[in-house]
Amino acid sequence: MEKSRLHQRYARDVVPTLVKDFNYTNPMQVPRLAKVSVNVGVGEAIANAKALDATVRDVSLITGQKPIVKKARKSIAQFKLREGQNVGVTVTLRGERMWEFLDRLMNAALPRTRDFRGVPSRSFDGRGNFTLGLREQLIFPEISYDQVDKARGLEVSIVTTARTDQEGRRLLELLGMPFQREGDAAPLAGAPTARRRR
Image 1 (cartoon, rainbow, N blue to C red):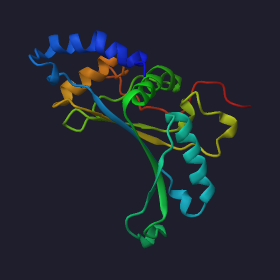
Image 2 (tube, rainbow, N blue to C red):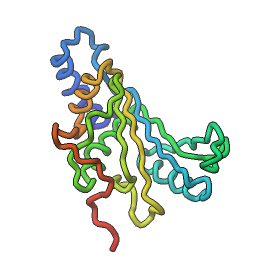
Image 3 (cartoon, rainbow, N blue to C red):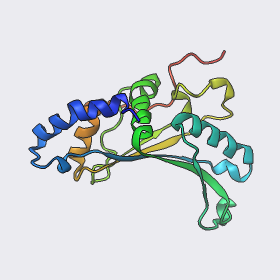
Image 4 (tube, helix red, strand yellow):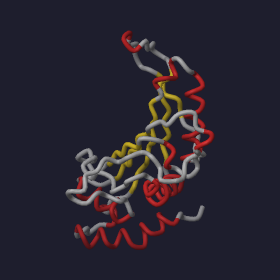
């Protein structure tokens, strides 16, 4: 399988820059992407089974892979939630699908967000992994506004082999992740700038 555009850029430009920035002596030290997971909570699926079907369809379109339905691990009476009920969907992307998804996220979806000023750089976990919350699926060009039953938020987690947040941030920065500049801390809005139906 041919390497995607972003994967080629990683090998050609990102690796040599990281080696120079962090003085790695062994090529295995250079941080790389391990996997990307996309999660969507569908609380309303308890009362509306169609909501789950719509979410599975949207996530399949966005990622190019069929998601796994997540079930509640325990019952919570105040939320009328019983163990085993469907509560969300998740997809784990690896290989070329992961590279292609990230390319579309950074270069097609995020720039369509209204008043977009970059993604917050403090969402690292201390070990070089980054999690990004998106308010709605409509920023992805694969999603047709006319076919969406409801705007749903999704969480994108990017797992890297970096050992520190500094290395993880530099890796994603070089790949094209549009991090906010200091002092530019506007929230990541979820409304796409693409023309909406009147």
